Amino acid sequence: MSPLDEPARVARLTAMLDSGLDEWSAVLTNGASLKLAASASARDDCAVLTLPGMDLVVGSDYVRGAGFSMYEHGQMSDYDIGYYLVVANISDVAAMGSLPAGVLVVVRYPQDLPDAAFDDIMRGADEAARRYGTRIIGGDTGTADQLYLSGTALGVSEPGTVLRRSGAQPGDHLFVSGETGIAEAARRYFEHVADGGARLTADVEHALGESWRRPRADVDLGLRLASSGVVTSCQDTSDGLKATINQIAEASGVGFDVEAGNVRISPLVEQVAGVTGRPVEDLVFGGSVDFRLVFTVNGGATTVTDFLGQFSDAIHIGSATAGGEARLLQRDGSASELPGVPWRHV
Image 1 (cartoon, helix red, strand yellow):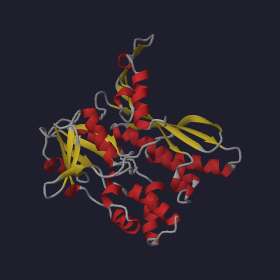
Image 2 (cartoon, rainbow, N blue to C red):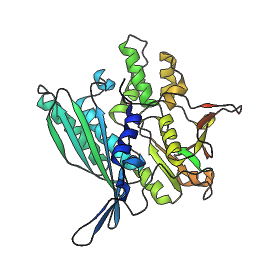
Image 3 (cartoon, one colour):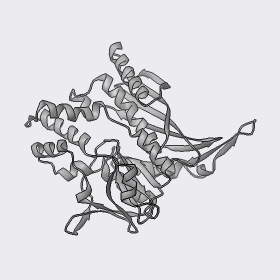
Image 4 (cartoon, rainbow, N blue to C red):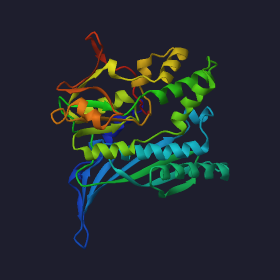
């Protein structure tokens, strides 16, 4: 029997570990209480703990192993993967609408890793943490058979304002915080080049590489969405746009109609599609780790126009439906399953 993929194993784990966990709480000797508000069974970007005067969010992500192809193809330095590690974790905090409050970093390395390489990883991690107003506050290090990086990000929110995946309702408006597919296009392009394929210009290659070397977590936007009072669900696109929309749909018990004409396509994605022969839509919706935020807005509380008046950079791409599936609607009215292949660890 072949091993289960990541979603299947997550389902098994939550069934195994989460029995009764949502009711867990603790009280200190001074009377202060701690309650678990969202555990692994919620499948949000982070767990949520309710503390006096605040909610604490905690999320963890492993980002680097032998399969991190952009590093293996020489498009990322040790400094870059340290930076990427921290942004990947802080993006989970951003998706919860929380303020980053510290990052724990785990670096396991082969014995022949030079000290300079180790230092570069940590310098990159430190720069990313400072970029988002926080610091590396701890972690673990030691030897292993190869280089492994993992992180845990902490965030804080005002009580009751944390954004979850499970609040979307039929009639809600669906938004994304920017263009998607660039990171996937970069990965596919440099694999194509490594196999001897045609190349694009140096400027385009640099821009593609920067999507991995200097990714961006939408922390400020997440905080604004959380305080808006009209956002009903949110998640980052670390598994790609298709996976994110489907995961919000599943958690909320809704469907989505995504309007193809509203989905913005980066010129970088179009150029990569041209030289690699991959469909543009597969890159845009597939397993691209762009760290954009996908979120829904209460359709009964505000219009798309009014919301865009406050959040002008958001892109309205569709609406939530009572059906249980996510569809791509073309201008001619035809509908199909969302294109692309979601990112899945196996």
